[in-house]
Length: 190
Length: 190
Image (cartoon, rainbow over the protein chains, first blue to last red):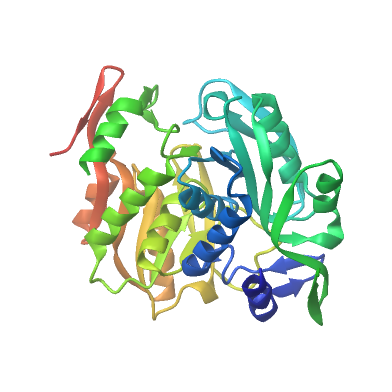
């Protein structure tokens, strides 16, 4: 998505440790008008797949998943990372290593919110090593749901997670794929 | 909002410890079609206030804030609860006790995303003791932003946080206000 590549080039900041800061429009501060454009593009990519649910993981994945779910007019479900008093009942769960937070989380979805009747589109803000998506794929498989594919707003192609999932046969679409980045600039995959 | 009261009555479950589980449509699983209706009602309530930004706190507040921001076509900013590698720069921060998680968090917003030029609408999924909203009000005041008001999807009126903020002069609108609840049923404020 050309407009996203331009926005990343203009507003993104490359921080030490392969961290891309896009807090001005994509997370922490979310440009809601642009978010809707990204959601529309995601719908275009996955239309005709019979999507019944959008699946993501808290916290920064929720804004994009919400917008995509609104475009598809289907429910959005987010996996929780932390035990919570308002979660009850049996859960599907998976272990996820967070690149951003440098630790392993247990992520969980209440069983009643994901079933074998669902065709899910798994979304997230970032796709780097692919750990969050792998955890969500694991959860969708536990539920017996059909996985239509995965869509990240930004994929760090050089970290390999997206290509690993593609090699396993999953359809992975990312709205922008970064081939390389450093303090001097950002290059996108053609 | 009558439709929300009906949905809470139909799908909500009262759990021990004054916990209302509405995960089937409001958090964990989010009914995106209904979410848009709630966002439209929120826009109706606060139209004409010159809102420039929607402010919330991660994680379960993000879906509602995103939908509201899309209705207003303004950015959504969420306070972060956890230190993160992709957050840099100076932060406004406040301490918040989470009723759901039974612990105190530090919540923070990067200074550049909230300024004295902003008129903010503070939103959250739940309003109970009001601690999250108080923390967000604190942050908005640190930024010198104008606070147009607060809007929660569901207020637990009997926990007093909303009325305390109203008594302090803030405009607090909640789409549904629960006056009392127990295993037998839920009563809404007239």
